[in-house]
Amino acid sequence: MSGEKSLEAPVGVDHSEQDGAVLPDDAAPVPVPRTAEPGRTGWRRGLERFGYRESERDGTAERLVPPMPDGPGVTPHRVPPSPVLLRLGVRLPDALWSWLCRWAGWLGPLAVALFAGVLRFSGLSGPNAMIFDETYYAKDAYSLWQVGYETSWPDDANGKILSPQQSIPFRTDPSYIVHPPVGKWLIGLGEQWFGMNPFGWRFVVAVLGTLSVLMIARIGRRLFRSTLLGCVAGLLLAVDGLHFVMSRSALLDLVVMFWCLAAFGFLLLDRDRTRALIARRLEHTPGGDWLYLGWRPYRLAAGVCLGLTLATKWSGMYILVAFWLLGACWDLGARRLAGSRHPWLWAFWDAMIAGPLLLVITVAVYISTWTGWFMSSAVPGKGGYGRDWAVHRAGLSPEFVDGIRMPFQFDMSWVPDALRSLWHYHATMYDFHVGLTSPHTYQSNPWSWLLVGRPVSFSYESPKLGQSGCKVAECASEVLGIGTPLLWWTGLIAALYCLYRWLLQRDWRAGAILCGLAAGYLPWFMYSERTIFLFYAVVFVPFLVLAVTMMLGALIGPVTASRDRRVIGGTAAGLIVLLVMWNFLYFLPIYTGQTIPMDDWRARMWFTSWI
Image (cartoon, rainbow, N blue to C red; front, side, top):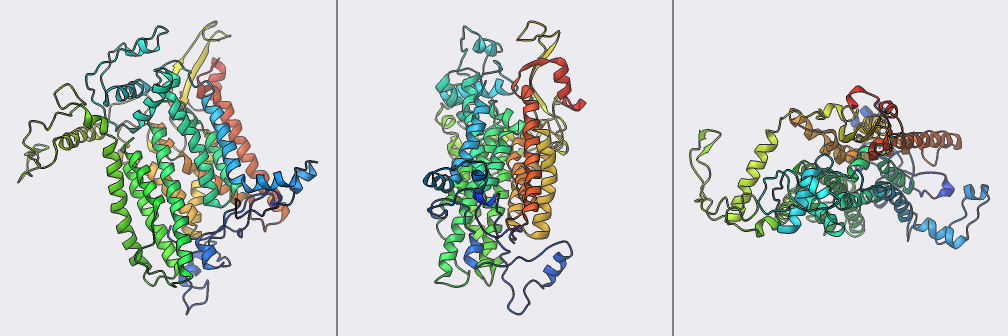
């Protein structure tokens, strides 16, 4: 990831008159040794055997921060009319056309996000039930907004809450929970606005799902320097089945995905901002051996998002480590491109500053999200679960651990009782997670996730003729948590393509995509014996989409390619997008719980493992 190499295209803009996307020429940041012929080092000669080709180099400033494709200050004041629209007999006023081109970087992503929002909010209140783990999170969220901690509920609570004559059997007895509170605070926000009903507890998650489409469109635009490819990324995420289903369910994993994607976006902004500062500094101070690269607010914002990721589910700690390493590699590349004599040394220095800073921010954000639990009573049975654990304890570390006597004990009495209680509570949560091996009908192994091997049925009913709109002898109504198959299978190929781009062509964008994909996916292989599910994969779906988008960009080809090459490549890329959209629409009835004939349901069960 530290080295960088462009796709084939030169720098440019992607206005419609150019008929397509432009991928930036961000050449490898390794300065050519003064004593060597450019492109003929031993390393490059070895890579050339596998298809590596050195591109023409721009100036250092443009290589540090390639120009954006459009926007104020980039798009000319007057943009010539589009030849495509003119051939169709459409001629917009020059001022309007120029304004549309100037703000295309926002108008396009907003249009795609609007499309995603309409999909996600249509019929959001159905099914009128607590599907899958909503039975826990919807009620936990309600409790958090009432007393600041999760409480226990009677066994018949679901029926009373969903009854036309609703009654909410809330009580204040603390409940043992195993996930941090941020996702439930957000779910509860919708309940505060719209009531304790399916629309209420799904509302905020649907908002986050819609906003994530806007974010990935903007991230894709910045990553590939192409508004078109950014919008393609947003469109593909909008029609991914798993992202769609999770956006319409009050579960925590979509919230984890949102904060993870936000952190990645802020890191990308930090990369561009820091490199722009370096480019300006090089005008006055040659070399890259500076003690301090500058004030980095976007990295701090990324730390806040990582803290919120961790405070939703603990799987966020792997994302924290991966993104810290990603930022360190980007800093290394920037220093090498700036001409540092000791880039690895300074990159280590940067990482040692960024790591503790991100850790402190993440921990501070994480602990602050437990404020409701801290503020609850320490009287036994009157506050959050385990809030009173340390009140009457001496503050010594355990004498025995797993039945083994410790050689000495630590005096922890100086730590506030509330923090010691929280630590003990987290120890029990950790024991629960690592010991969760109870078999479940829909559990799956991570090896099968990219192949969409074992989806999760969130809700299933078999209405008969005359029931729930069934017009044949037997029907089915299901909400199936499954990714759009054609998108995921294409994503598997695209991930291999990104691996090729990163390893053999030193493309930093491919490395960044693979980093996000690995952070959300690979850690689950360490817990494959645990009870885990396919819908955990929603966290890395945005990066799978970015991989597909990058492959489609290469398929379209650079603006310097022949017209025939562009037409053929663009047609192939468009056909892939259309097939993915068709596949999504085909499965839409089993994403939304529509009542369909049983034969139609069986036709959508392409594999027996999907049943």
